[in-house]
Image (cartoon, rainbow, N blue to C red; front, side, top):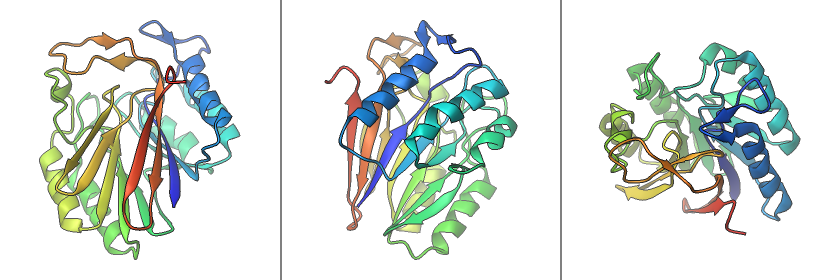
Length: 250
């Protein structure tokens, strides 16, 4: 059994009081981390699926690192459309962080993908990245695979969000099906919850550690839901549990 803490879209700033649409993102992320650490559910790994920062600054990544280090866990990071790859690598390629990495843990293989397209809000998985995924899985003896990326490979049923999803989502899903061992896909970007199955693969999104988007909205709209995170448990038989924790649920 492997426990994964899933965090996404913290949107940090260089300034400690930097705010995204009225929410101070550092304080909001700290609330999430405090909530997790106050509980008795202990993670083995952390997955952060993009948009670590908002203001294109190296200082924001340094702030992310300092906030996350007290967890004392290996952290798998993938970039989002607001991230600056060169600046993100400087921080996230240094242990205990990793950048678009893969790792075998027990019966599971965890793989991080870069779904970002330069200067675009929508995502696209280049052929090279899809081939890298296939090679990683093909060279692994793990029985089960969890894939992590930023952009949604499925429709969110929201007109504006569906214009900024993964442009080649159908190709990506076909690749996952062909690999045979992928059980779970996690993503961010959408600032809301999603949990559905596609041809035997569970696909989930976790809301942001700061502001949320209104589900089902044709036009951009904010939701008043609080910060959230997920507690994912990967079982040896390939099954998984994914508990969504809203900070107002306690």
